[in-house]
Length: 478
Ligand code: 5CA
Ligand code: ZN
Image (cartoon, rainbow, N blue to C red):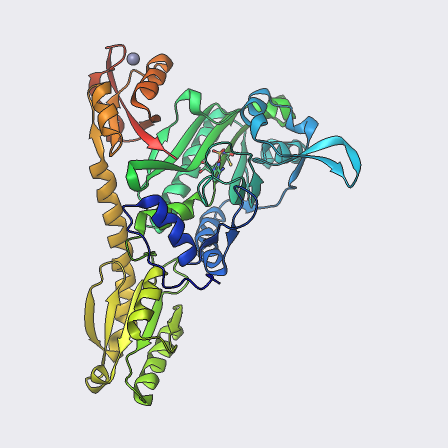
């Protein structure tokens, strides 16, 4: 499947762009050879990983959301209803203009996101107080004619795995609480992927077209760039007014509903690969690894005992519900190690004649390369314990890197100099003019004022010299 160049070597992770592109095909995540720019193909292994990641998202959403499915095509008149929304998306929309040879009476947009597909239906579905809160999500493909440099999993023209949730509430406050609830789901989702996040309120010039405000989840990728891996928008009554989504309040008066929406794309997989991967390939958290344990017999000539021992270990682990692969191929053990390390298998078990004499096996962690000899009878417990340790270690490594990469900058010059290797923390008065000037001068983007202590602290806005208590983060982004 990888066109025969298995012997090719993965570039070091320091050479990130090359590392990323090579790893995607060497580990069989994505094939980038599809002949349309910005569209890519999931290999079965990559798609298996994707499904495991998305089943976590589903599990978290299914607690109080319901999954549905709306059409891909949106009639032009619906699409054009909300002014801000159109302004934000009109340059990115693909249009279907013909059915066969007939020009369509009403051109149809391929959804770039689904507000304008969903809300005409919400108008019919929401009648009274009792219909709210309405919380629905779908996982679908969306299309955006991106003009910035496209990249697999990061900036796509067909987003294949767009999870979008759309909720409806009686009041502004209830919708604000839902934005926070959505962010909590994302925090938990990324914790399950062992990825630390920064949550911040986007500056008003960077909010979602049609939103009252936008909260964003960013992660730190290699090369000190941040990647927006999720957003939650408070839509207030901006869409309910244009789509006529109203309810009767307890006094019998018609009110416009308040709405939110929040989305995640396969950028979460890009983050998973890029944050945890190393010079030898993927390092996957056990929960999402398509293969969690690989067993490799170390045999010289005939050695049925060793193979039988491997099969017993395989059985033991499978009865515990683990995803195990016993690799009985003809390659040398070294070639097998290399192959499974590339694919990010969290734990490797080696059994040779000498291990068998002692009734033991060797267990190797993918994240640390640490090796241990353990009694065969303990293998199930040890592997499960290692899974916990690996997840925690991957998170801690990423968290340390994130924490260490945020540094205080007092002046624009300082930020300008440091932003190529750091996320800069700068005092900001919150004014648009100052923010835009900072972005321009530093050559990077303001993520916003992050939640928690990191977003607070006395200082002086480097542009207007005014005192302020707020700190913004500035970084280069994808
Ligand atoms: N309707 C809202 C919420 S569902 C919406 O579309 N928000 S969005 O435009 O911010 O997109 C949600 C998330 O999708 C973004 O935070 C980003 O992580 C991801 N995303 C946006 N554009 C692309 C793209 N071209 N390729 C891959 N991921 C993308
Ligand atoms: Zn200022």
